[in-house]
Length: 416
Image 1: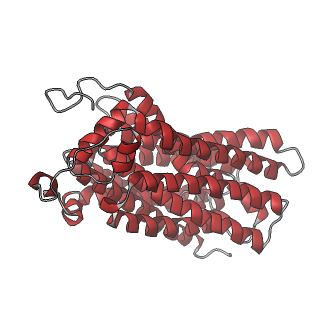
Image 2 (image 1 turned 45 degrees about the vertical axis):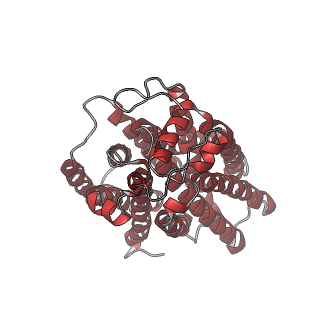
Image 3 (image 1 turned 135 degrees about the horizontal axis):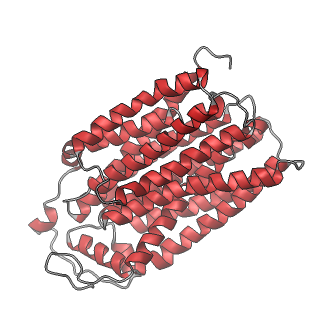
């Protein structure tokens, strides 16, 4: 195991840059499948015009994600993190490939049958997200904060890069017959390959990095049982200790962790309640039509995703990281001003104002997410950091689920 310096940190750890890059790749794979489905929302709107696909697919996805992650978080101390994450990435790969199969098997036809099939696969994405996001955040929370930041930057990058790819495929295929479908096929072919890469990276490369082995060994020495399989793959054996060792048993309960971090959990919940009450449903169906025509929704989603990615890197700039817990709570409450802003802009404003608001929505979402996710787990032992990481993801996905439900309120008073 890597030698320790005087302050309890590794005096020299190899592989830090590679670890940050692989965290980014694994984060990218954690939302690549779902973002691909969201980004080709205009294709599904054409294929299933009466089923509100942008809202329904999200509504199907979120309850499965939230319920699964809640169950996993409750039992996190007894779950093997390696098996959990590998199952999630493999499920992402299989479900992404099946979206491609459904499209090819139905020859791109609409109807209730193919739509139900897509909804089932959306539910699979939700389950996979719960396994991976909760497992990875819990695992990385017992490591360095910058690894958590890199993972969340990868999450946002999946949205930004799929949006850019959607703009390219729309420009390339728009004038061709069946252009929407060709773009969708390309999307999920790339997605399936990306998910397969994540399976291989997590299984064979990530656990063998020196910095990863160090932090997992440290967590195991503090009583964590979730890292045993990954340490075994890395060729590290942790000496067994008496189960009654007080140093290993002095662990805060989940209830105590919740009370100590209730402001972080509420703030994270509120961030995603607000964001998902607007994105993607409102932007896809209720933001009006303007001179950009069929490009309008695609550009809006791209702007959100790009600025969400930018927001996740802003805290890395010295002096721009918000560490005040009160400041984070006040800021997340102030974000609810976006609701009247979007309503009146859609009703009276032009596309320039809508693009600006969407960019600010994405920027603030990414920024506050990283501020909370990197600050909350500090000061705890490995098992507690893993538990808190899981609880934070429960709060995040709970906010997503609530936001998706509230998004339907924009349809009140409108003809369905």
